[in-house]
Amino acid sequence: MKKLLLIFVFTFFVFSLKAQEITKDTTKTWTTKGNISLLLSQSAYNKQWLGGGTSNVAGNFGLNYDFNYKKGDVVWDNKFILAYGLSKIKGNERTAKTDDRIELNSLWGKKSTVKNWYYSMYFNFKSQLDTGLDKNNVKISHFFSPAYFQFGPGFLWKKDNNLSVNFAPAAGKLILVHKHFTDLGSSFGVLQGDNSRFEFGASISAYYKVSPITNVSIENILNLYSNYLEDPQNVDINYQMNVVMKINKYLSANINMQTIYDDNAIKAFQVKEIFGLGINYNF
View 1 (spheres, rainbow, N blue to C red):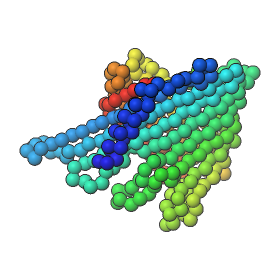
View 2: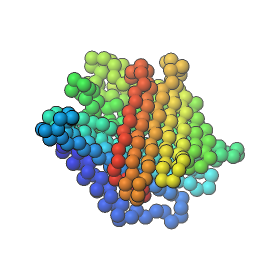
View 3: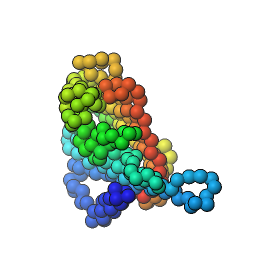
View 4: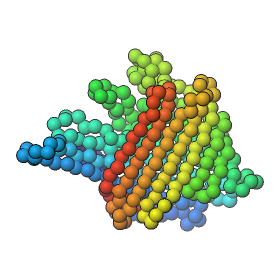
């Protein structure tokens, strides 16, 4: 319950900062936009309720913020994603995480002589904020463990701010995990006894945002990675879809879906989906 309260306090703190209105660069070299969401759900049943059910409360906070630079033949696109969610079921002492992500995507490009094409350099960072537990209540992760980094030069095709694809044929990937998670075996692809794993391969990153109808936006983020050094045919996949369906300026229905495939971590698709109605604010 204390962690749920922290979500609410942090959300209102961000809203209060926005109320002061961040001043944008008057030269228009920088453009910023973002979305804050707080999804809430609650169910309650009294002792006489015959249909069955357990009282519960859940909250999910999300921040999706873009800050992009463009001047002359240079572009620099940055996206910061923060997500955290908790649920509490009556009678269960443990509060469970429903979401936990921190991610930064940065893509620099210098225009080439070919239309819509740029020479590029990209950087990606992914990690989490809080401790992760398995079904047996055993700690399997915590802040900055695991942490993923990708970086490398390449070629960017960018039609506009809503559609782009970056190709990086020489990309590095670094995975960091605290050593106490690999004492008894491998963890998140890092071998037993190690605390890091380095890969060298090729990466494709794509971004597509569309508004099929009024007040509905669908954002798609895709990253593919092939490791030249080991099983290059096994491509790592990370796909995110964020759907915002606005009811009015402050209320919306949100869908967040993420699919991950990394055979070094687990030889199966990891799928997560969160749907909720809550507070939503664009800035």
